[in-house]
Image (tube, rainbow, N blue to C red; front, side, top):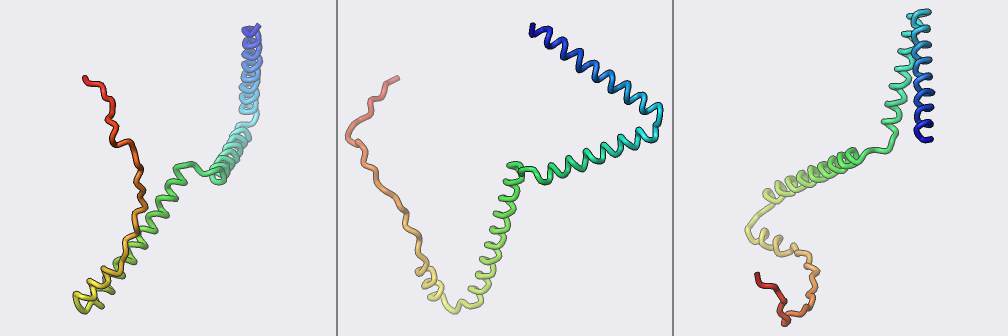
Length: 130
């Protein structure tokens, strides 16, 4: 039975395609300029819909990654500009070596938040010898 269903749908679709081709040929022979004009209008409308859908559709992951990359690049550039600006100010305002040492001492490193996990250190692992 499934074989007959596929066969009938094949004939129905084939018949529709043949009728469409006959209609296109008849329209082209009756009014070639109008036929070409209709095809051009359909193509333009299709392109307009395609570009609108692409523009307003959900952005792809590549676009998101590109935006994230550009944002990070801007931040990095701004940070480098601030550092270079600070370096020129420091070099001009440095009077002695002691002020440089004091400024280095005032900077604190953030403490490493590490914890010790007690394990079974006395027990030897049972390894197979090869």
